[in-house]
Image (tube, rainbow, N blue to C red; front, side, top):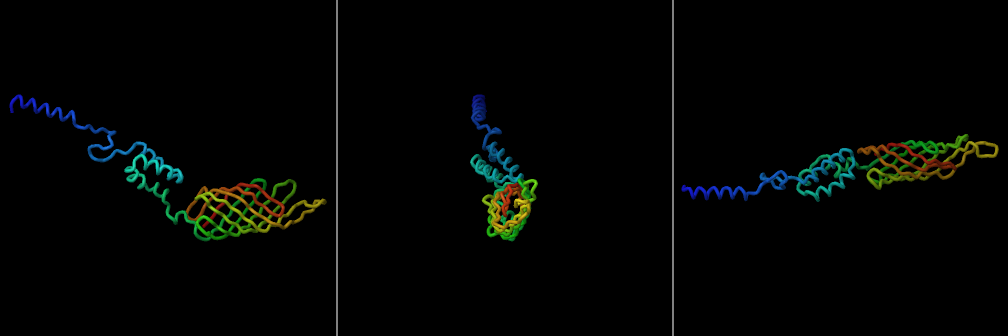
Length: 232
């Protein structure tokens, strides 16, 4: 090869190196053909995994669309295949179903104290019908007033864990001093319960709840808040 030819060859090689594309860490299509995921999509997927483990599936659902919008390929390869996220977004029917016999109990305190039992059937996954007995004391010192109610009730879950609860029946209320002479007496009448609650624990066949309600009968009533358990 002549000297002139060697100079031309060197120029071609150098020119080719200068014009060749350079792939860096931030390039979405590196030389090995594997796309680099959008950083924000990776961050949101990690956050979704943490929220799923904590049981905050509503927050996971919000992140679902955001990750897909940021990086559809990463969404398909990582977000939708994560076990914790998948279980949160697509729970099995058995895991959360309320489909059979149901029973529960609870206690409340407030303007008085109250305990309750109920027994019934899940009409649908979100509606229960049951019979109920609740007994309470109304705190009106120095009187000792008590009531007992037998009622039919309905509980409805408009949300996976949140519910409203209504009951109506017959009540007997004992008033410690209901006459001029201070004698006690019993009044019979309508009794009822109107409340709402949230299941802080929701497993396949039971739930632990916090609830508030107004309840009473026989001329007595309380406003209370408490804790309960349901089995279904």
